[in-house]
Image 1: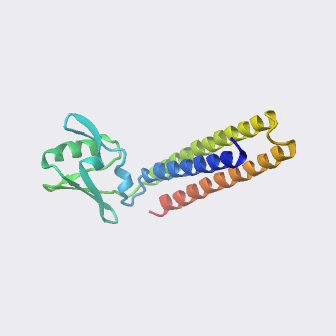
Image 2: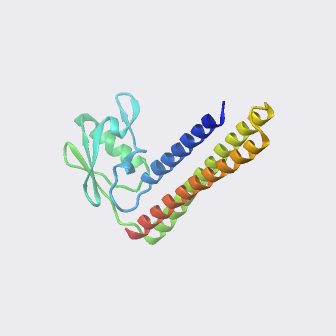
Image 3: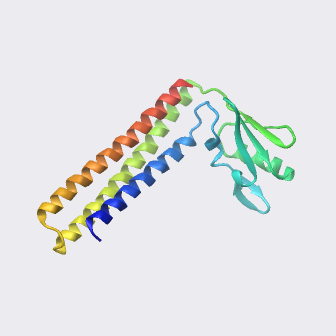
Length: 186
């Protein structure tokens, strides 16, 4: 493995970590309707537990209202039960084929709690980035030990990897700041 492959792998893994953080943030309820809010909901359907998006279509019908169009009317009760059991603090309302889910406003305590959870998600992503950096630095060291690169190259590559790591962590922190603002505004 050469340095360009190490760098490409590092960059790809940083992007995956960032995308994972974005998905985690999408699941945090901020008082505003978002289809990502129902991603963790599992429904008992056809003898198995399946994600909600496999039994119906989730849409944002208003700023504070989600709508779930269930494809099989026989699953409406199971979808309602799955939403309640997901522990999201949501109260689904059934009107036949569509389930409407009003998003209640957040209390100040819940805002503080959500901010802490967002911080925990971000810290986990930072740790992941540091592990990725360590793997890349180990690969650089292996190249040096195999006499494939010089000490000067090793030093230069390590500095470049550190710069990429710092940028990745800065990006994660920017996502956290944006999520904190979103939590406080609603």
